[in-house]
Length: 329
Image (tube, rainbow, N blue to C red; front, side):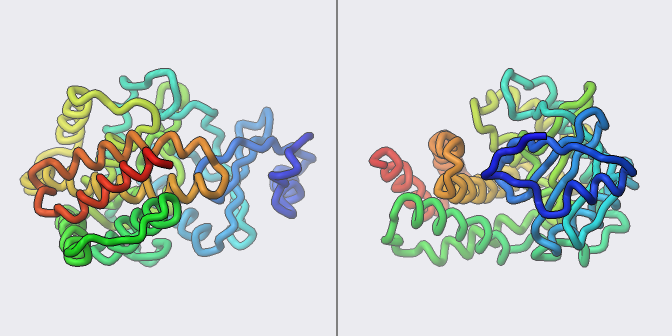
C-alpha cells in the first residue's frame, strides 16, 4: 500500500478497519474535495472508510444517516461505525459524480426525484437534536453562514474589500429574513445538495455528506442543485424542466404558492455560501476552486437583477464590486 506523505492515514484507521473485517486490509486514499473529511477505498471489498475529525459532526452524520437509511432514501449503506474515533465503513458507490464531466444532464431528473423523496419523507420522526451546529435553518443562520461568509471570506480575505455601502447592514437583515421565510414549507433539507455530493452508481443517483441536514426550506436544496454547477451552468430550459419535475415528484400542496420566489431568494443565499467556501478553499491551497468563482458570481449578480431581489441595491453593488475586484486580481 502506498499513500502520499502529505495526506497520511488517520492514526488507528488501518487497524480499526482490519479488526472490523477480521483480516488484514489495505486502504487507498481517495482525492478530497472541499471538506476536512477523508475517504479511503478498501480495494476489492466494495467498501469505503470515512474518517471525520469533528466528534459532533461525526455523531450528526451517523444519526441522520441511519434515519435516512430507514426511510428508504438513496444513500450508501452504513456497515459499521465508531463516531468517537471518527471511523465509518460504508458502501462504495464508485467515483462518478453528477458534477463531473462528461455531461450528465439526463441524470439531473433522477437527482430531482431523489430530492423530492427526501423532502416528502425525511422530516417524519426526525429529531432536531441530531443536527450539527443549529437545529434548523433560520434568519440568523442565513445572515451569518451565508451572507456573512460571502462578505468575509470572498470579499474580505480573498479580494481585500474594506468599504461597505450605506444601507448594507439593513439589507442583510431583510434579505436573511426572506431567505428563511421558506421555512413555512418545512422539509428536512440536505443543505449541500449539489453535483459533487451526488454519486452515479449502477444507474442510480445517491447522495452523500448529509451531516448538515436540518429542518428548513425545500427551495434551498433545489437551488443548490440547479445553480452550483462548477463547470457550465445548466441551460435555462433544462432548469425549468427540472423545476417542473420536482413539483410533479413532490406532489400537490399549499407550499407551491411561493415556491418559485423562494427558489430565487434561497438560491442567492446558497450561491453566497458557495462563493465564501470557494474563496476559503482557494486560500487554503485548493486552487481548482478559484475557477468556480467567476461564473457563479456572475449568476449571483444576475439573480439580484430579478424582481424578488431588486429591493436590495446595496447587496447588488457589493456583488458588482466583487466582480470588478476579481478582474483586477
